Image (cartoon, rainbow, N blue to C red; front, side):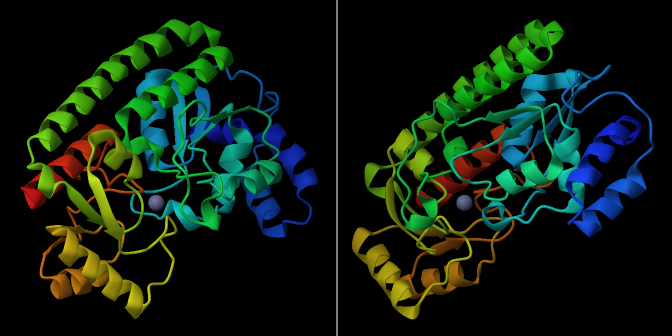
Length: 322
Ligand SMILES: [Zn+2]
């Protein structure tokens, strides 16, 4: 923490001037300033690379690639909905001090452009989704496409390659270490991919039907050749309202397709899933231990890391559908 504090000084001068209108933030930043002078935020720091990662998944990838050469500030907390996040003054401060900012991309971080300009961020911005084949979005809110790219481990290999490239450019002395870390993690992603495929392929084909809470699993469904029956929230947007008619339609779809379970997500309230499951007469996987869709779980949970999250999701799906 002392590193964060001691490097805040010069950035603060820059920021407080630029943010005269944001009185609350200015107050916060000034309160933390130490007045020392160790260069602008974009200069290479003497110690670790300062990295801000937006989502829980992206922060996990950043830790995997960066290892002990990076100091990671993760903006989203476990079980916080990334679709309607509002950044705090502390988030803006962290972004202003970062050397590298890593985002998921595909329009998931709707708050990011404004935060970057408020923070006066001058470092390297990484859109981890660059090069990933993006599925189309299902509504106007998602004009950039489906942002849940991490549910295909092969997409994560592209994301970590983007992260490695940015880290090596920002910290050339660490290039070999970043490459070694990324290569080792790639091996684990390949093993995960093979393991998921093996487990899903063991399900009877007629059982491979998913009813999920919101449209978070499209990349997983495509990769492992499941059938998407419907979602409880009929869009990517977790705050979308559901009408009684939507519920009836989904219950009908579950009955006609013979889908065997409804999956909620750990980060979302299970009420609607339970109503639908009851009406359709199928089992409901909800609450703690259901699917990790938009966020990793807290430390110690089955969703504590990306690799564990995907293993957990697969085990949960296979257990419910076989
Ligand atoms: Zn989502």
